[in-house]
Amino acid sequence: MNDRPQRTEGPLRLMVINPNTSEAITARLRALAEDEAGADVTVSAVTARFGAPYISDRAGAAIAADAVLDVAMAELQDGAEADAIVIACFGDPGLDALQGGFPGPVVGFAEAGLRAAAAEPGPFMVATNGEAWCDMLAELATTIGLSDRISSFLSIGDAAARDAELCRAVITEEAERTGAARVVLGGAGLIPILADVGRDLPLPLVDPHRAAIRKAIELARAG
Image (cartoon, rainbow, N blue to C red; front, side, top):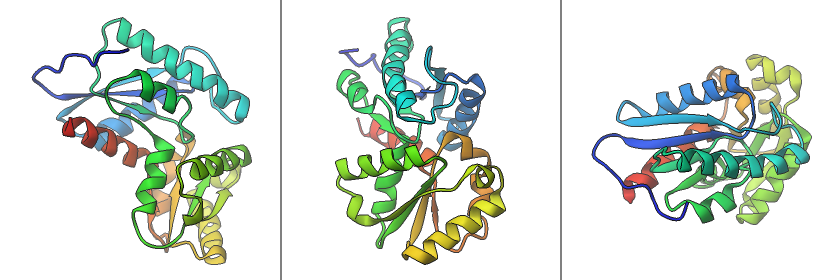
C-alpha cells in the first residue's frame, strides 16, 4: 500500500471498512455512506475477514485493528481502487497503522466526530453503548488533545440503544447534569435510531459516522 492508486476520470472512490464481521452491519454502513456521499462518489464497503461480529470490548477492538489492515491490503492488492478510506467503527481500530500505509486520506468515525464537535464552542458529551467503549474513547480524546473539551462519556445502555425516545431522555438528563452544549452519539448499532434521537433533542447531535464520510471526501478532493 505504498503508492496511491492512479486517479482516473470519474467519481471519487470511497472505501468503507467495517471492522466487524457482520455483513448486515456492512450493508447498513454502505447505505449510510452512499446517502451522505451523493451520486458523484462511488462507495465500496468491505467486511473484516476475522474478528467479532460486533466489537464490544478491548480484545475485540485489538483484533479489529489487525483485521482492518488485513482487509484493506487484500482489497487493494486485488485491484480495488480508493481515493479515501473510512474506518467505520466508533473507536477507529487500526487507524494510525492504516494512515501510515495508505497514501490517501484515512478517517475514523470517532476522531472525526470528536473533532467536529470540538470545532464548535462549549463543552460536549460523548455517548455510545458500552462502558468499555467509553473508556477507549476517553483514551482517544486524551491522545488527540480534546479531553478538556468533553463534559462526560456516557454509556446509554442496551434498552436506550433500541429505543430512540429513551435514548433521547438519557442523553438529555446527562447533558443537563454536565452542562454539555452538544452530544456526539456514535456506534454502528445506533445508526438506525440516530435521526429519531436527534429529532426534538434539546441540544445539537453530532453524527460522527456522517462527519467521517464528509471529512474523507473533503480531504480526497483537496488532494
